[in-house]
Length: 280
Ligand code: C2E
Ligand code: CA
Ligand code: CA
Ligand code: CA
Image (tube, rainbow, N blue to C red; front, side):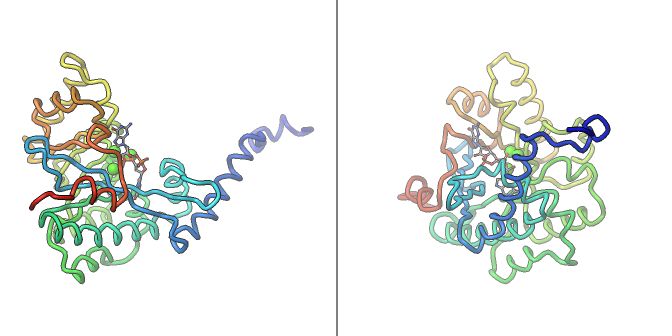
């Protein structure tokens, strides 16, 4: 274009334009996704490494778009965050998970627990004095420890008063807190003494390459012993092989999740493959 030199910083390449257009369309379609029943929760079992029992699962969003088919949360969650639709979607996720956990506690094990991911954006723009999640749990008489909220380190590093207050309310209401993707974001650990954390989830990038002598094994060992001395339980993510499972179990890791045990699956599949025939 003629003014390219001067307007360099405003110039969009066709590829950038196409990407922006796609984002805009996904944002539009996302607005109707909840009402149109296109969102679904899948559940990935979290296995107790000592006993092999499964009393926990992580809820993960799935979007079946009527024309485009399956869209990954890696794609649409960031767009939902930008447009703030993540608040409404996150509330839907929470209510679905709370309904599901009540069913599985009754049918399978009274301590069954479901964790939900909560984006920092949800904490930052929620404005109600009291969390509707806590009201929901109270109204539906769900027991303590029914729900875990997975948050990322970044939320705690620049936690303002509202975030801190909300986390304390969660604690009072029996909602547990897990740090997701632990080890990937920040070098500061000081938030671990400031906040009462229940679980650390070791990011799958550390688990992927562990072998007995590897640096990743050293890091996993260190995270596990530090967490335990702080009274925090450890969940390893992304466990894909028996060897990884065995190394983590030997290191004293409490829980693991990953394709080795099961991919995230629908609620009916979860019931069929894991809850069927099991006793409380
Ligand atoms: P995450 O919270 O770290 O979730 C773990 C991701 O690892 C999931 O991807 C899961 O399917 C995948 N995974 C599980 N086991 C393995 C394994 O053995 N190997 C490998 N390579 N991957 C494994 P998914 O379901 O595509 O979700 C991607 C991300 O989207 C999540 O990462 C989370 O950040 C976000 N997300 C998903 N559901 C929600 C939600 O309800 N709310 C919010 N705010 N974010 C969500
Ligand atoms: Ca997570
Ligand atoms: Ca994670
Ligand atoms: Ca993540």
